[in-house]
Structure formats: structure tokens, C-alpha cells
Amino acid sequence: MNTESLLSLPVQAPPARPDTSPLVTRLAETCGATWVDADSIDAWAAQGGDRVVLFAGDAVRFPEGQDVAVVLPELQRSLGRRFEIGVVQRHLEDALARRFGSQRWPTLLFLRDGQYVTTLAGMHDWDDFLRKAEEALAAPVSRPPGIGIPLVSAASGDSGCH
Image (cartoon, rainbow, N blue to C red; front, top):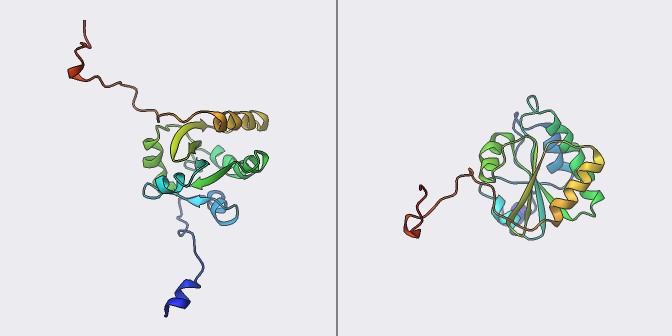
């Protein structure tokens, strides 16, 4: 195969995995969402602007994740396409969600210019969903939540115990 014929091959999404729901796969195949994973999310998010990643969760345990997958493109349209959508294959969701402090399913992860903004967990009534997404898009960047235990330097001179 010569170089010209390689360049004319269509770009294809990663193959769907049996554990990734058809509705999540549809977001990438027909709605313009980008597949992201631990290796690509930083570069994708750093492309600039607001970005929303769907962590749908297991379709059997968290069926509302499928509802969010259907509503997300409508939310994007209603908000003037102010954000790009990223999706994660199911077998990669847990580790990536933990990286951003997400512990609920489904969750929308909001990023801006490569930085964490917030998460929006669960499925909501349309008006509430729209309002909460607008609030997330207006929120400042912040630090992803950690495990909740602040670290104190021993050199600071302050004792943690009195």
C-alpha cells in the first residue's frame, strides 16, 4: 500500500467493546463526540474551550446513564454548542473517573482549557439539567476533589495535634 492510499483511509473510532453501550458509542459515531482515555484526555482537553466528558457507568446498574447519553447532544444544542463532548469506553471509565474525583454514575465531567471545572452527577429533569449545565459552564476552574485529607508539611512548624 503506498502513502497516498494510506492517507485516503477514513479515520475510524476505536472498535466498540461489548461493555460500552450502543448509546454511548452512538455519541461518537453520529454526534461528533471524541473517544478519550487516560492517555488522550489531557491533549483533548487542552485544545481549548469547554469540554464535557460522559461517564455513563454500567448500563445495567445505572440505566440513567443511558438517558444522559441521549440527552447530552440536546443539552449541547440548547446551550449553543458551547462545549465539545468526550466519551469513555466502559472498561476505562472507573480509573479515569477516580482521577477526577468522580464517584457517582452517571457523571458529566466539565473541563475548560485543559483544567478541571466540576462534575454533574445523575439524570435530572430537563429544566434542572439545563440550569445546572449552565452553572457548570459559568463556574471557574478548580482543583479536582481528592480523598478529602489535607496534607500538612512537617516543616511548617504547625502541629496537627494539640
